[in-house]
Image (cartoon, rainbow, N blue to C red; front, side, top):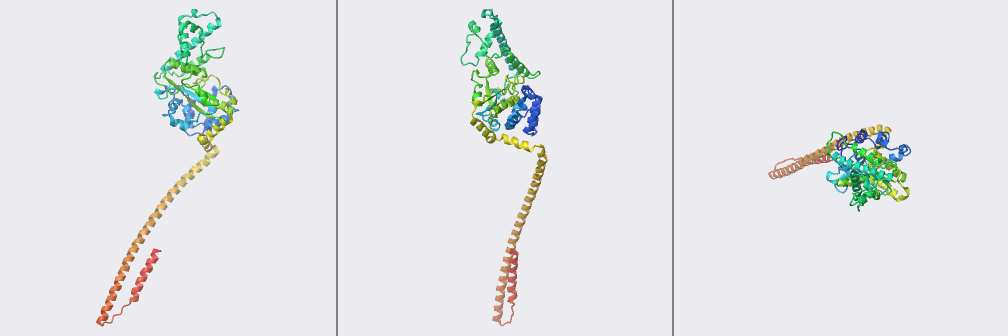
Length: 458
């Protein structure tokens, strides 16, 4: 996954706090150490209810230990698009090595991308165009609101500029619908128009759109190339008892009537802009105990993803309040437990590193390392000694063969000497000569040679 850690035109919302966590991760810090840094830092300030980080701290820590280090890094450096956009082919290895299966309870994150851009999102120029559409949609809500409140506005009383604004809002509303509600944008259709993405809060129907516009403006850094594509889109985090079923409502090709309004509004505007964006759902945490753990998972995911609209994402409501326990079976949690504890290695790997880096284990770790180094030296010495023994045995074998060869030659010489002596004795007897031959000494000489040979062979 991408090693770059710096704010740039590609990563305009990458904060110093995120860079600090990434550095800890790259330097080999344990997940416990990173978790403590996280929950005591500024990234959690987006969560209003602080009890999540006190009352539910242990649950949150367990969940944090279950995420792969690769996915955590990807989240922190805002690189979901390039790393995970093509699940079936070009990003397949990243999915296999870092991502849980999505079919179960837990917390997920959604992002958008453009396929022809290798998973990246929009450029600064395109984001400004998106902001212009959102401005018009916000104005359309205000026009609609005034007309309804005063009950004196009729369609005929709207000026041309207001009609144009309403027509653009109608176009945005119909952009992803399977059946358009305002196909002709006639006066009659303008008269019955009601913005589908207006806020449900009666006090301020445009408040969340204002926040979204501010969030997008923060992505438009000054002094950067306006045509460089940003690596990651604004994110949306959610939770569910069945993440696969729930996230299917947020995928490309839907009308988004069951999705949060900012998500649907953004994708509808991009459709009007004729930018072919696609969507991807990534499970961040699998739950294995109960509904409260699912809620805690959503809180943690929101912090890691920076998905609140006040930060860099599309979430408006505070996390951890939407999950309904009764919809999820105990069997689903059991499957989650198997998935986290057995099917995937990340929890065990993270725990092992945490144990190894505990303060009281540091000295032991050093001793173990020293012992391992000494063992390597002994193993090398043992290998050298074995080589010396092998060479000595080979030398002894060669000496034995050489001795046997000499012994055979000596025996042959003795035998020939005996035959010559016998021939000489026979000849002298025939001639009448008196010759005394001490054959016993010759025999003993052969025996002595044999004894030497036996001693040597031993």
